[in-house]
Each structure stands twice: as C-alpha cells, then as structure tokens.
Length: 272
Ligand SMILES: Nc1ncnc2c1ncn2[C@@H]1O[C@H](COP(=O)(O)OP(=O)(O)OP(=O)(O)O)[C@@H](O)[C@H]1O
Image (cartoon, rainbow, N blue to C red; front, top):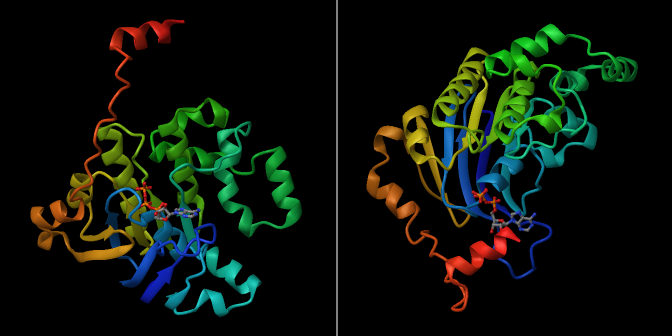
C-alpha cells in the first residue's frame, strides 16, 4: 500500500493545548495507482491530511505507514529518502520569486543531483527541453524564461505542477490545484495530473473545493468535516444528500455593514 492510516489523530504544534485535533481517528488506505479526491468545507483538515501523508506532520496517535514503512520510526536520513518518493504540491507553491520558470521547474531534479550539479543548474539550466515539455503539458510552454514573480496565480500553480512531471515521485499529494483556474484550464490540469499518475502507477490524492469537478473526475471521494472522515466511497455511491450533509451549515452569512456606511460613502472613500 502507498498509505495506510489507522485511527490517526493529528494536532498542530501551534494549536492551543485544549484545541481539538485537526484530524481525529482517521482510517484510510490508498493503493498504488489509486486516485482520490478529498472534499469538505474550509478547515475540515484536507491540507493537514495531505501534509501528514507527505510526512510533514507527526501524528499524535494511531498508526501510519508509507510504502509499508512508518516514517516516524525511521532515522531522519531514511525519512528524507522516503519523502523523496512523495510529491506534495501546496496550494500556494513557495517558488523563489526572482527565479526563472525554467530553473524553478528543473529544481524538481535537485534531490538526484550532487552538490556541484545542483549549483551548476542554478547558474545554467541543465535540461531546458525537459522543462519546456513539462510546462507545455500545462499550457505554459511560452513561460520557460519568464520570472516566477511575473506569473499570474494560476500560472504559478501550474508551474509548480510542471515540477511534479519532472520528479520521480510515486505518490502525488496535490492541494487545490485548480483554485485559481478557469473551468477549461481546470479540466485540462486535472486531466494532465491524472494521466501522469496513471502512466507511472502513482497514487494521486487531490483536495478540491469544486465538488462537481471531484465527482466528475475522481473514481473515489473522501469527505472530511471537522477533522473526521464522513464518507469514503466510489463516486457512484456518493449521493447529493451525502454532499449536502458534508457542507451543512457552512454557508457564510454576509457581513452586516456599519449602519452609517452607505454604499455611496464606501465608494467615495475608495476613490480617495
Ligand atoms: N499551522 C497551524 N497551526 C494551528 N492550527 C492549524 C494550522 N493549520 C491549520 N490549522 C487548523 O487545523 C484545522 C484544519 O485546517 P486545514 O488547513 O487542514 O483545513 P482545510 O480543509 O485544508 O481548509 P481549506 O479548505 O480552508 O484550505 C483548522 O481548524 C485550522 O484552523
């Protein structure tokens, strides 16, 4: 199995001692090549679960294995090697702003370079053709030599995903990859991720706020709410009622304006 979680509880280090854990008693098994979408309201624990799978959060209790190994019983060096088999794509990728896109994408190969090769690749990109091919699959072939800080939010997200194509990872953990994309690009991006995962039999765990996209694209849906798994089922078995229960009472109430702030006053204030 790629991931095996039993009764896993995870608490953020920065959380108050009496705060509820971010994840409670989770049971989850993900096989090689399996593709699943994590859905659930804001704060449900999707990002925490992805980071836990990526061995970035140490669970409080329960059992957790990645490729059959408990990462937290390994030495730091062994855990680092295990992590190199996983690719975590965060929602806001921390790409160095002044770097060229080509250098940023080729950084996916740094774990396999010695110090000298790594330094040389920062000065002169080693394999721009590979970076170009990866970017092209996300529709960004023309951005090869652009600076990262001149990309739009959606382009930056896809630039980070292009790194995934150059990695040798066996599991992809992707946090809201389409949050900044229009519907056509979103479909294309999910399709590319899924194709890549299928071609290397990698597991794909992807968090999404777009429930209909999750239902349309992923064979298995895991619904998280308040840190607990509400359902884990093939998409055919996920009903509208289950989705409604997952998001129940999550509608945000509009913020009441101050009584003296008429829209006119706010608009005038905005002009000055
Ligand atoms: N670094 C942190 N320190 C303390 N608590 C945190 C931290 N990060 C997240 N949390 C808390 O953990 C819980 C789960 O957060 P998480 O970011 O995993 O949710 P999410 O489902 O990914 O939300 P969203 O859809 O808004 O991204 C929330 O209650 C959140 O406030």
